[in-house]
Length: 95
Image 1 (cartoon, rainbow, N blue to C red):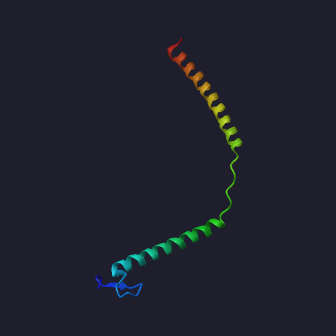
Image 2 (image 1 turned 90 degrees about the vertical axis):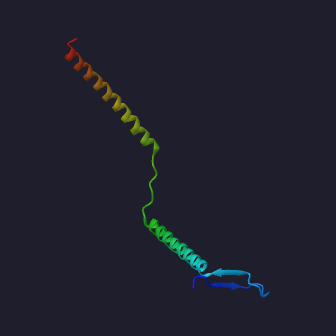
Image 3 (image 1 turned 30 degrees about the vertical axis):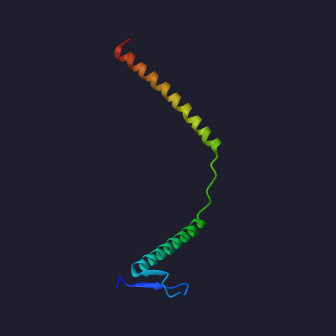
């Protein structure tokens, strides 16, 4: 059953121009089904994306201000930590 071939004559000269076996027909059919399923899945995801809220624009200036603020706070924290460490060293080594 799998070894049967279909011969198609396109130009009516009596010689088959295309020879297709059953396995090839199944492979082509599977590809068509796979592509159809992928297309319908893509269409459904597009419809879902249309219902989602719009993305908000990111204000870069605000982010840069926040980064600068956190850098200053980090520097203050480092200075405080260094002072505390020096105080502890003085107490431990009694300088």
